[in-house]
Image 1 (cartoon, rainbow, N blue to C red):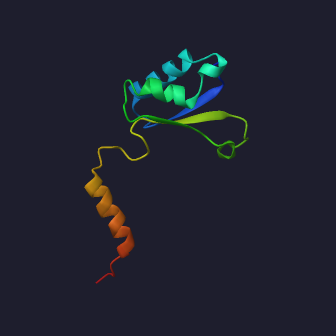
Image 2: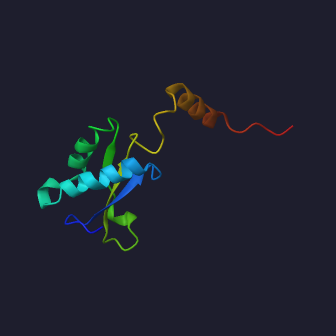
Length: 103
């Protein structure tokens, strides 16, 4: 789909079709220059997904450097919020312990 804003969305998770379609529709409502910004799309998405985050991709992230793209995270990042803080703390702590030697 071609938009006046010439922005491609890079949604996470990609397999949540409802989330992807909603983000695309909301971006379409922002067409028109100054109205289209990552912050504005994020504000609209947060009505449906309170932890949503939208960040612009750095130009270096594009193969040809010309395509504008925004990363759109439904859960605030690549790690779903379903992971408890305790589980995340255990994972990070294990990184510092190193791997156990094989018996």
